[in-house]
Length: 302
Image 1 (tube, rainbow, N blue to C red):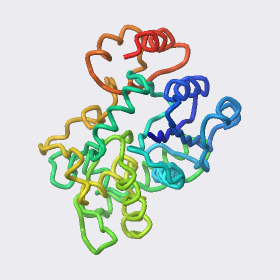
Image 2 (image 1 turned 90 degrees about the vertical axis):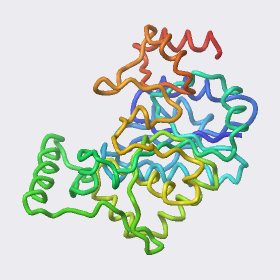
Image 3 (image 1 turned 120 degrees about the vertical axis):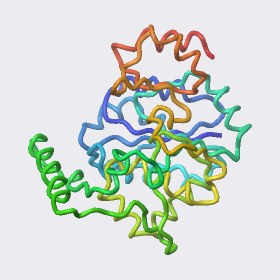
Image 4 (image 1 turned 60 degrees about the vertical axis):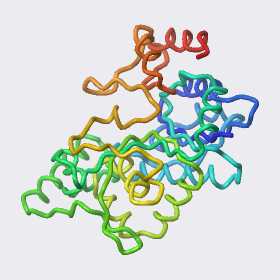
């Protein structure tokens, strides 16, 4: 049995198609977070009988609220008490390349594996990645319109802290008194329930750790990874062995993603690359642009 936790903010029609594709008769539970900045009615109208919606958060990309909705989704899945093999994190613009049965059987054969890839920022050589935690990133979660004013305020606050040489250490304070290396990876992973429960317990017991990441950039790509990679679950995950940052696509364990330089919308012409990738999911799929690709994936039933 699997739980899918999905974050969405647009394209309710595609999300409905994704949910139909993921669902089968063997007990798949699906939990959805819809960004509070958008109207949730189209999503609820299409999916209220198929998924469990969690409390919505006002999400600003790169801000702490992305971690908060991850917590909401993980809590909702664990609260069912169902015996999941894994809790699989997706976005509303993903699509499975494998059939539900193939996915379920694969996870059932790897019940001890945490599908989380990570790069050690603290000990790595990438200054850009280190700036995500060393520099204070403030104001990302404030609700300020128009957005251009908010963006200017964010840049001004970051610039001022740099001029004043106000920085943070490259290690994060964990709730057990340890100072630990920081890791980064993709938002999209699959955790065993015991690992997911450990993540939530650690966040709940570690206010200093939370505060450290609240002033970091894209904490949703670091917070959970840092907890897992500094625990006994690290031996069941994958930590990138080199000091050179490999890129986010290489740190996304289950998805095919094309970054050049941003995530490219996938179309039918990408199908050969998707098949060759051997990945379980792909991203980014958009209604009206990716329809022929999705239809062909469904027809092939990999």
